[in-house]
Image (cartoon, rainbow, N blue to C red):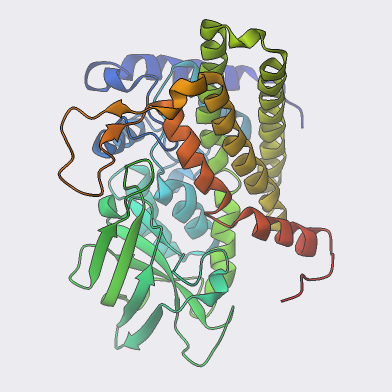
Amino acid sequence: MDLAFSAAELAFADEARTWLEEHLAGDFAHLRGRGGAGREDIDPEDLIAWERELASGGWLGLDFPTDLGGRAATLFEQVLFHQAYVEARAPGRIPNIGMTLLGPTLVAFGSDEQQQRFVPPILAGDEFWCQGYSEPNAGSDLANVTTRARRDGERWLVSGQKVWTSLAQYAQWAFVVARTDPDTERHHGLSYLLVPMGQPGVEIRPIVQITGGSEFNEVFFDDAATDADLVVGGEGNGWQVAMGTLGFERGASTLGQQTGFRQELDALVDLARATGVVDDPVLRQDLMQAHAELEIMRWNNLRMLSVLEAGGAPGPEMSIGKLFWASWHRRLGELGMRIRGASGMVGVDATVPPEDPLDLGYELDGLQRTFLYSRSHTIYAGTNQVQRNVLGERVLGLPREPR
């Protein structure tokens, strides 16, 4: 890849920096330097409002076609925007699942009608989505889903349970993998449905995490209805579409995620300097290792994105990125606790005694939340073990693991 920036791309970067500086003010000034994975220091409603503010400036869906409300930005322009975002100390982004996952999936697999109906509202920040994949007995083994959808005239009726559904309590829509052919098993007979959340047949139950937050949810569908034509990629082709979505999850969307990683690492370096532990040769080596691995992560992601920009489709090699960043961020959380020392084991007393037995009764700081939350990275969206199997069997051509 030729990483020399053109005059137009440098002008694009200047536009992004200027816009961010002007808009991280007023009602959004308090967001600077806050948020990020596992940190609940910003109300999700504020972050959703920030997504709408980004949309007002045309900064959502940079790589989407202009006829769908995007900017058709080049790969380099996307990289430059995310760099400018970090430099501006803009907040860690809320997982905008509609923009990063469903939108690219609709462009790749959806009908023209589905694209025109759903992509523009996503890029305008008007509709928020959640992902209906995992179930109690179908996590990394997605083909084991038992959620079913039966045809009833001009609609589908969906029944079943999904779990670990991020930010479902704020979503207007969900994309749901369900079995539409009851006589099939495993990868066959699945369909990829678009289901409205605000209806009587949908119940959301928050899951309180070890961090005290409730980003994840259980979602129960009881004959929840959706229109018959809201099947992406055609009935029975849900596995192919779902794998395409995971490819986008492990591809373009991680570029923004890495901006938060960079901020976290920079903060750790500052903390190590402030406390004097930066003089510890082992910690210095581990910080340098984290920096080098973050650069490797960036270059690997750019390599993957260059395939997508050239018109290629996400493939199993996208698991390289998921395996790498999940393990890296877990190690970063552990490194943060080592830098903090014994104080990292102590929470701050909550100002109000907990009435809910699920309340922690104390508050966690950003480093503690990162340490706890990062444990989940190697589990969700495909465990590390599953990613290694995918790479071994589908990329390296090794024999299948014994079942």
